[in-house]
Picture 1 (cartoon, helix red, strand yellow):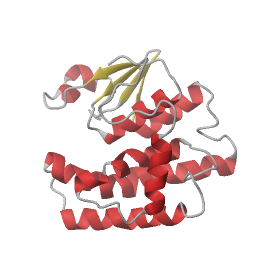
Picture 2: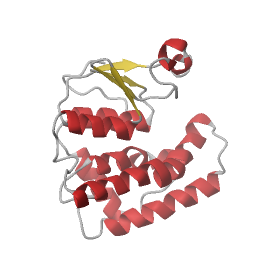
Picture 3: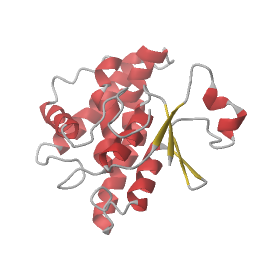
Picture 4: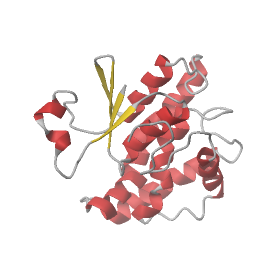
Length: 203
């Protein structure tokens, strides 16, 4: 199993984080975005979208960070991370959709402005970030985890760009529940930060 990865991608981080938390045996393959490796013919043959992350396993290529987490949870029968019951699965899917929508276009986009000089309106994306953070803050008022009574891939889907939101000038200081939730995730065995190599995984 190989994970094509870039250390400052929040999408890549969430996939790598989940694989680390479940102890999956995976080789990390760094993709040099600055040199355009993700747009090379060789890479595009594996992933037409030309994006990271990308998981290679038994001749199959799984693109998209949320899809990678779903695949790994199914492959390793980790129903603790991805419930099989209808309501549990629906609750997780709800937050995967939030991660792909409001999180990507809120705190994720705000971070792109400062790091990659992306052409978003900073005030607009920062306001969008605070809008979704307020919703998550309220959701976490009565629970420790976002979709269940334990951590699921929904928590990881939200984590990376929220944790790095201050890099996009999104202040997290007003969100006490969110900050406690971030700390709970960071305390999970096998947790890995951006740019850090977990024990037992190839760099």
